[in-house]
Amino acid sequence: MRAPLMKYAFAKYAVAGALALSLAAGGAVVAQAALTQNPAEVRAGDYALESSHGKITWSVSHFGLSTYTGQFVNVKAELKLDPANPSASTLTATVPLTDVAPNDDRLKAHLQTADFFDTANHPTATFVSRSVTVDPSDPNEATVVGDLTLRGVTKPVTIEVEFNAAGSVMGAYKAGFDGEATIKRSDFGINYALPAVSDEVKLHIEGEFVIKS
Image (cartoon, rainbow, N blue to C red; front, side, top):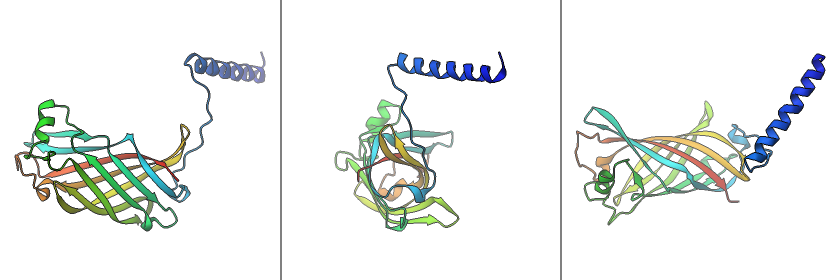
C-alpha cells in the first residue's frame, strides 16, 4: 500500500474508532470552543461561582512538625467582571463555616466551637472586595483587596489572583481563577493552641465562575 493510502486508511480507522468509543460510553462527540488565556477577551458580565468547582484550601503549621490542610466547600460567590476596566470589577463571597473538611470528624466538630469558628453565633464568613488592581507587568495577575468578616470581626485581606482561562465548557461560558492569601487567625479572635498551631493561615482559592448575563 502506498504511503498516501496508508495515511488515509489510518485516519479513517482512527476516526471510526473514536466514534465507536464515544457511542460505547453513551456519549456524543461534542465540539468544544477554544479557551482563551487573554483576560481582555473574556466576556464582561455578572458571574456566579460554580460551587462544585470552587473551594478554599487552608493550611497551618502543626507544632512545626507538619503542614495541616483542610478545605471549605459549598462556597458561594458573585463576580462582576469588566475586562475593559478591571478596576471596576467586584467580588463577594460567603463561606459556610460548618462545611469545613479537615479529614477528621473530631476536629471538624471542634472547629465549630468557640475555640475556633463559633458557628452557633457566626455560621458564615464573608468577603467583599474594595479594589481590583491588575499587575502592569502581567495582565493575567491581579491584587484584590477586600474586607473579610469572620466571627463578627472585619479585617482587610489581600488576595493575589491569577486568571487561568475562559470560554465555553460543557454548554456554559466560564472563567477560571486561582488565588492566594495569608491571614492571622488571632486578628479574628481565634487564639486556641497558639503558637503551637500557627497564627498564620495560608489560603489557596480555586474557582470556576459561570456567566449569568
